[in-house]
Image 1 (cartoon, one colour):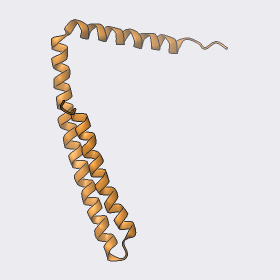
Image 2 (tube, rainbow, N blue to C red):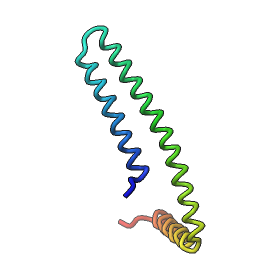
Image 3 (tube, rainbow, N blue to C red):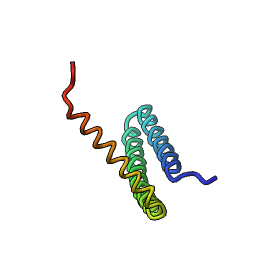
Image 4 (cartoon, one colour):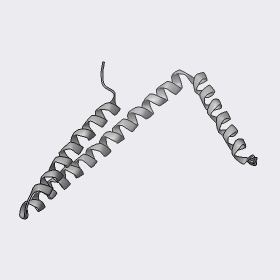
Length: 103
C-alpha cells in the first residue's frame, strides 16, 4: 500500500528536524570557533528543511486541490448535500450564538 503524501512530508520533516537538532546539540558541546561553524551548519540545514517543506507543501496542496476537484465532479449531488449540511450547521451556530444567555 503506497504511503500518503502527507505521511511522506511528515517523515521528511522529522528527518530534517533530527539533522538540525543534531547540529545544535554539537554546537552546545563545541568550544570556541567550532561553535560558529556548527551553528552555521545547523542554520544551513534548517534553511534547506524550510525550503524543502515549502516545496513539498506546495506540491501537496496542488494534489489535494486536484483530488477535491475530481471528487466534486464525480459526486455533484453528494457535494451539494455536504455543502447544504455545512451551511445549516453554520446557520444553527450563528442563531445559537445570538440568543441571549439565560441565567
